Amino acid sequence: MVSRDRGSGPFSAPTRLSRRGLIRGGLGLAAGLGLAGGLSGCGSALSAGIARTQLAPGTVTYWNLFGGGDGVRMVDMQNAYEKSPGASPLQAATFSWGNPYYTKVSLATVGGAPPDVCIAHLTRMKNLASAGLLTEITDDMLSLVGLSQSDFNQTAWDQAKVDGKTYAIPLDTHPFVMFYNKDVCQKAGLLDSSGNLKPIHGKDGWEAALTAAKKVTGAYGASVCSVGDTSTPWRWFQTLYSQRDGNTPWLGDGGRKLTYNKELTLDTLAWIQSLTKSGLMPPTTDYAGAETMMFTGKSAFYLEGEWEISTAEAVPGFKFGMVPVPTIYDKPAAQADSHMFVLPRMDRSADQLKRTMGFVKFLLSQSMTWAKGGHVPAYLPIKDSEAYKKLLPQANYAQAANYAVYDAPAWYSGSGSNFENIVGAQIGLVLQGIASPKAALASARQQLEIYARTESPL
Image (cartoon, rainbow, N blue to C red; front, side):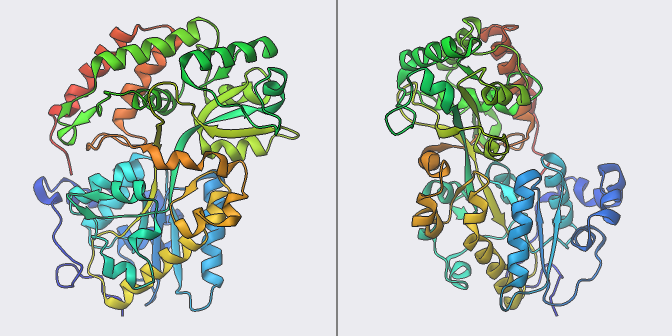
């Protein structure tokens, strides 16, 4: 029988969320947090975590936040697991992306009945670990299923540590990259004899490439979302800012201090604004509009996360390539995040732990399926395989995972966070020409200082 009791097993420990009793008390307020509907509609994995229903012995429970193409691929991977020899019964549940998902994970863990394993963004995982909600990943745990630290991308693995301890197993890295329309680039003289994009270096090289492309498109050289989405403007800016010598993280001391390099921040904002003011990039376009411009030949380049590969592949007859964002400044860098497997804190039997780790190992072995959706595998036996090297255009930007730049840790930062919403909105105003770099930075700072002064609710 799988034990769900807390406090007596080798992998249990008290959490630190009792500081306010807020989240513990919040279990009785599930409806107010949008959980009540989920209890009846999302399957027994959610019920087990929030309502404490009993699962069959030996069941592996797994939560994730994958929708769209990612969701389809993850279901395929789960189905493959269930059909594999010796697989345990599986109860999987998928929830809405962003803050609601992490609230559910926190509530279930504090309530003593979390899933065996769940997905977390690397930039959000650290909050869970700091709050005492995650089980440390040890070498002994990895060895149960034949894994070791050396099996993973070192950048992602090193970032999975909190206070020197590892709390997550990386599934992927998803960097900000550049798509290109091959027909437009061919006419603009930007492709080599093999039909691949010629290297672009520096601000002058970037502006020259966009100018050549604009002559072909009659509209723009490159497109990036500036309205209706705060994450993309932040990713675009952070990629460029991180390429600069002398850049410092935006946040320090766990988010209690704002530590960005003001001079470099203002200069980078001024440059990306100059691109929209000059007409090389559109000042005002939403997420769908930015990619549609590239699909329809209104821009040569499109800047976004690699997950949009599925959208590009669905456009009939569209020929495109993908590369890392060019090195505009001093060194290569790409804003990124990673999906990680985390084991919420609970009292686990040895058998339960081995089943859970076996499930994680199996999903890692399915990383080629996952890679087809654009994400760069963190599991090196797949990433370094001949099959992956032949997977194009994915293999052409995989190097970006080695110089991925993750958002600075804070209780209010990370993918889909308040930090992204605040800073990304101001960068969007800069791109649109509505705000000056100085005014945008001042507004962002004023808003962020409120969070920096606020004690973490975890």
